Image (tube, rainbow, N blue to C red; front, side, top):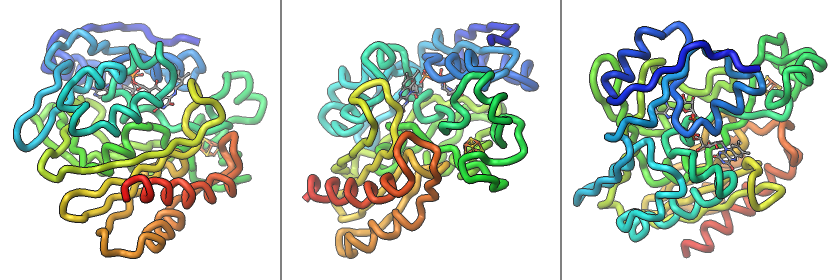
Length: 309
Ligand SMILES: Cc1cc2nc3c(=O)[nH]c(=O)nc-3n(C[C@H](O)[C@H](O)[C@H](O)COP(=O)(O)OP(=O)(O)OC[C@H]3O[C@@H](n4cnc5c(N)ncnc54)[C@H](O)[C@@H]3O)c2cc1C
Ligand code: SF4
C-alpha cells in the first residue's frame, strides 16, 4: 500500500524546513528511503507527503577540524570508508556501517537515516494482512502488546547499528529547525517508548553527526543476527575507551532505546556489564529468544573488552 500524495525535493536545508512546516500535519523526510519506503509498502508509514532531501549538497560532506569531525547526514554508509580521517580515527564506525543490511542497500542508505531508522518487532514488521489477522498491536492502532501478552507499553527494539558505536564515542547531532541550529547528544533523542521512539521536533533535520577527535576513542562492537547480510540486528554491542580511561558501553537491538552505561577503566568490568544487562528491557519480539539475547549481551561485551585490552 503506498499512500503518499505529495513529493517535494528541496535544494537547501532552509527550503526543506519550510516545506516541512507547510506539510507539518503529515510528512516524512526521505533520504536513502531504505527504511521509509519499506515501511510504506508494509502500511506502517502513512505520511501524505515525502520531502526528498537527497539534493541538498551541504549534507553530503565530511569535514574535519582539530577538535572534531562532522559527517553530513546524507553521507552514504558505503562512502564512509572513502574518507581518510574517518578511516584513520574512527575505523570501528566504518566497520559497523559495513555490517548494516547488504552491499546494495549500503550504497543508498545514509548515516542520518540510519540513526533515525524505525524501531522493529516481529509482530509489527509484517504485512497489513498479517497484522490484521493477529488483531494489530499498540504500535499499529491495536489495544495491547502481543509480544508481552498484553502489556500496555510497546517494547519494539531499537535497531540502528551505527548509533550504538556513535553514542559510545560521544557523538552529537547538529540539528536544523525552525528556530535555528543546535547540537544535542545523540543518545538524548531516544525516548525508550517503542511507539514514539524519538523526541525530535517533527521539523528537525539532522545536518551533521559530530564526533570528537581529542578523546582518541578506541572502540569495539559485536552484532548478532542469523545471516551475515540483510538481517537486522538481534543485538548490537559497542564499547569505547578514551585516552583518559573513560568507558562508554552501549547496547542496541534489544530495548526500545540504546542502553548506555558509563564508567572508567578503574571500574570493575563485570559490574558495568551487569548494569547493562539489568537495564536492557528485552522481550520476545525477535527471531532469537529473550533469554538467549540476554545471555549474549554478557558474551559480546566481554568480547569487546577483550578486543580493546
Ligand atoms: C533488507 C533490509 C535490511 C536492513 N538491515 C539493517 C541493518 O542491519 N542495520 C540497520 O541499522 N539498518 C538496517 N536497515 C534499515 C535501513 O536500511 C538503514 O537503517 C538505513 O541506514 C536507513 O537510511 P536511509 O537513508 O535509507 O533512511 P530513510 O529510509 O530515508 O529514512 C529513515 C528515517 O530517517 C528520517 N531521516 C532521514 N534522514 C534525515 C535527516 N537528515 N534529518 C531528519 N530525518 C531524517 C526519515 O524521515 C525516516 O524517518 C535495513 C533495511 C532493509 C530494507
Ligand atoms: S513490542 Fe508489542 S506493542 Fe510493540 S510492536 Fe511489538 S507487539 Fe507491538
